[in-house]
Image 1: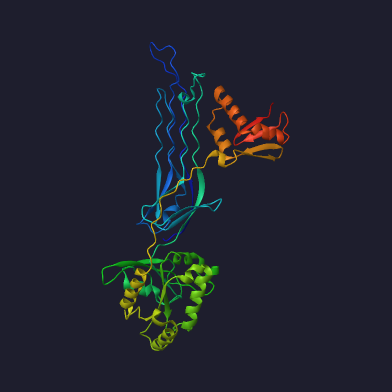
Image 2: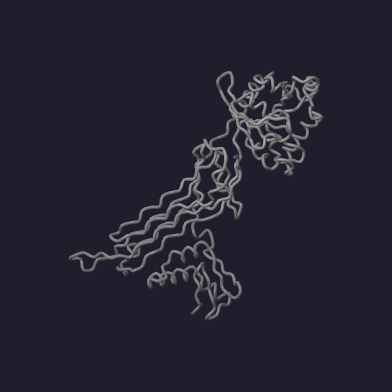
Length: 420
């Protein structure tokens, strides 16, 4: 089954907790801190796989979670990193954040990969907090919570040539004639309900990929017929091949068909009107078709080719011309390496305060992360937390907003009463 949309949940692995431990050995009466760090959580990584052509696998499996990092141990033993979760998707998959609509990845090359949910870093063990004035700290960090989000995936097929035409124009017959693809063929509208891909071999033993896009009709750009479901698959093609019923078997005017098809593509995406194209006047084996082919030729010149997809007349010549047109298009550059942007805490406010139903609600990635990684059951960790939020300026911000003794403050899952 061809599925080109999917919505799934992804979560990076949580980081392992740091360890509180002290060196306890014979003849070492005052051993220092000896707790190791927790391991980093695994990432959820999506990888483009050439052999996949559908998002069918994501119809039944909706949750993808990477492994969490191991906790740190005594003797400065650091926890093992969680294993990354590799998720394979078809080449041509676009991934967006479901909440924000942010584009996370556009995987257009076999083997290309993107981290969709990052694993949390491991918490530091008490060895990290030793200093000249505090030689035996008894605190450690919890592991950072892994990134989690719902994502939307959309598949846009990658093909060199897209066949565009009304239902029953002969697109499926043509792709069956020139490749090993065997789409369903019948003489009623919308026989093709899914895009079909075929590989065409030329006389010079070169090859290119051709896509049979389900038939378009007037209003397709607004979703009429199968419009929105399959128009997007045309966007990635390099050349458009308009297949027209020159015999006018269904009673439509062939000139009007071409005009409507070109307009629908332009209304859906204006860039498609600039795409190189050829016109195949099909069904030359039916009386009356040749005269209409000549009328098309007078208007569109050498872009028009006379063929019969059913008998094979002119088909090989059309494919050779299509390949020449493809070769004339400048090759696109390979996607650049992922650019890593380092965002420092100073680049964004550490917190935001809102009053919700009388409660001072504090939010922000940095301060929420601080809460999640602080072990509130450890006295030293709690003291460090209080010093950190004071340096952040949270107390000053709360006072400016008029907070009073006993008012409730909430940060993530932590609630406490304000006290001077």
